[in-house]
Amino acid sequence: MVTMQLEFEQDIAQVLLTQEQIAVRVAELGAQISVDYAGKELMLICILKGANIFLADLARQITLPLSYDFVAVSSYGADTKSSGVVRILKDLDESVESKHVLVVEDIVDTGLTLRLSYLLENLRSRRAASVKVCTLLDKPSRRRMDVPVDYYGFQVEDRFVVGYGLDYGGKYRNLPYVGVLKPEIYGGG
Image 1 (cartoon, rainbow, N blue to C red):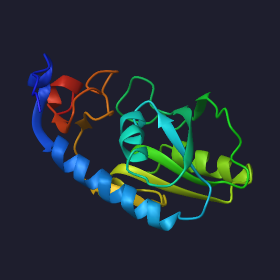
Image 2 (image 1 turned 120 degrees about the vertical axis):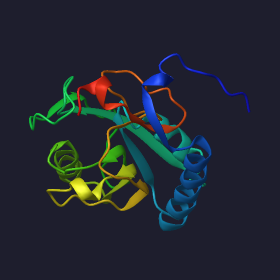
Image 3 (image 1 turned 60 degrees about the horizontal axis):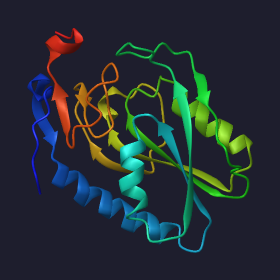
């Protein structure tokens, strides 16, 4: 494997999850999802933009026929904290009626962003056969609202993480690992 140096890697305080660790865990998730959804019509719903890299890798690890679609829901804007106001920026192109929906998210933390709970309720109202959540990262220490997480890649501490789809100000998504962003970059202290 060729290792490349990205010009903004000096902004990373620590590599939290390596590319290899992520690949192993995504394969495990794909295997479990394949068993759990055997014989069912599975549809993955990717929450843009952060979960798209995770979705691509996860879908290739699931051994069942599946479909997928994308939704963009925002509650952050350019800030590091949720505004609490949910906006659908891009709705689904396909119907979820009678399908077993697995929402693919990049990170679940406080549960107060409302975007995930809002989206889950919205999908249920569209008569999906079932609606579950698969997230790459789960931050249960920050949870202030009950949010169902059916599958998760890793539980992480309360640190500002980027890479593997996660961003700060639209940057760092293309890091092949998950890293902790230096506080001076985002104004944390």
